[in-house]
Length: 390
Image (cartoon, rainbow, N blue to C red; front, side, top):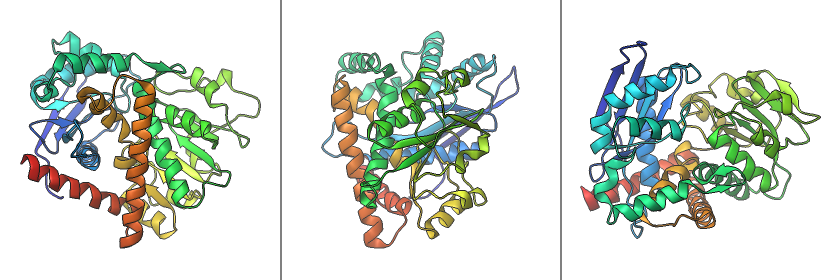
């Protein structure tokens, strides 16, 4: 589907002068879903693309027999450094300005540069019930649904919250299914991740548990690499809330490389899990991996992806690979899964395996890239949602 966004809002912070944006790409039953990110350089163009990606992500996960009916897509973004001591105040002013839209139309949560606890704290301060309260009129039993989601958010496994783990498991399962479909699952596979925050850290854990060798991880300061494999659990124990790795607690054999070296570490799998547009037409030539799985939003530019595809390097698109976090919120709230880690993990694994398998099948049958195949599947579902709900 093509077309312009339903609503675009530009905001200027009266204190710092920084800019913020909200794009609602589409409403389904009057509601749209998408997170809020904060990073220096965030633009309206970026937020517009992210909102469109949320529409595709929601559509792709449509199950006509499920309790959760996909929402429309939206996204918020603030052009400000999340490490700045004024960042929380900027978020508070932004959310206060967007309050009428959060009340009625926009359900939102954490994204790049922001943590859910910060958003939840600000939402309470400005007098709203929840960052997802726009969906409350669609719930059959709001009290039971919100209690179930709150209980799920309290669950931890191995020191990480369930809300963090489901996203990483989705990316890991997309990776494992992709390797299987490419006939690479019976060989030793090395993986490099750009980003070690909520998505990157959890993805690294599940890939290491599955037997892949995590040989490189990057954060804002550079790359930590080890050709024999990094101790992922050690790195997780020694990272800050933005995914920064403590260099004082590395293991023997771990090497420090500059930030741009994340593409130079030899690996079969590459997982961009941080910023958008980090793989472009120029640096894609460095990539020797056979599979790229987009844990971040929009990490590979369209021209780079075209060049990668011509070289036989497959790219699992973001709106497939990183969709599990979004879906898990709604599966839990609507009651498709309970507040239980194993039940959530089972649902994520089965759903992601089905999505990636279907995408590969369409791509093979129709001679398409993986992205084009996924777009075809999502748009087919969006048409069905449109026919059902208008």
